[in-house]
Image 1 (cartoon, rainbow, N blue to C red):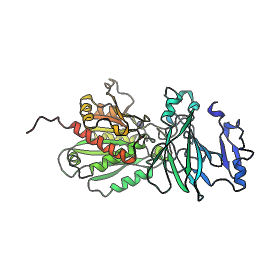
Image 2: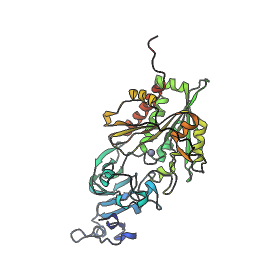
Image 3: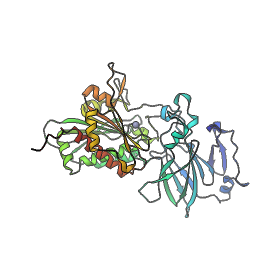
Image 4: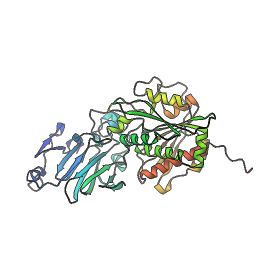
Length: 429
Ligand SMILES: [Zn+2]
């Protein structure tokens, strides 16, 4: 059965409405009674799905369909208008919604997370070997129970490209995401927390198309000696919330009383872009700034309004070292991409495989720069070409890591890179 033949229904008070192109579906009443009947007689469980908050995906109730009294179908690739790339149907890399139980007892709920793999338009086919591989990254969600701060991993039963999550929804608000979220509000709070710090200068470098703040944090000590630029960029890709936690870990470490951090602050001015794509983060997107928007992981040589503030910040930093923070979907592999092999060899001595989280490094050596300057480049190659930077992209995937683990991973990666750049020991003096 193709995805388009799947039952998609939308709840309106007391009735079921069939939507859009999905009219071929006929709702099957359960034992002679539909959930809508139950609703009319006051017998339906008091659970509902809430979306539309900062960072939710789907971002509209149209992407969350009720199929029974406590059975819901979530469409992570619902977008406000037809999208491209990871914003196309069947390509989503984002998920986040709430189950609200307004009753007094736990209610068992069935959540069908419908990733719509087969509905991807031909030119936006997912680059996976099979639906099985695609879903091997999507067979779990993380759940925050009412009144709790921690995220619990819940495994799903997968059929084709639907992940079936069964939960007992406790009274109150249960939040469910693919990965632990880090939304725009959280980023604003983090930046705000640094505003009075004597070693941090918070600078607004621009606004997103939807008028959200683009910040640059300049972090260094007060010593007047000449220093080099060190660039850290997070969250060009909205679904990659790990990059935000890694960035937080790096910044908090720099501002800690650690001896190596103090040494680093003496030698570098750290330029941190904490959230490069706030619109995408807020609107529940996967990769772009809008459903048909820009992928700001690139630095174009002739930037438009979206790219201009980000490019300016990079050009002003003239970084001797640049870190681009990402998280890919792979469960078991950390990415160490583009770092010069001599530095990389030292780096992995200071930061070996994180086996405690089930991860091994996947290393990709840098390619020679193309002789012809392209229209746009990854941050890494842009910095290598224009500033002869030591530049690296990290990909730290979630599965098996908590937000605190991610902060520690970021801290460790920054420490290891700084150590790798120190001259090798020459023996005792
Ligand atoms: Zn990315």
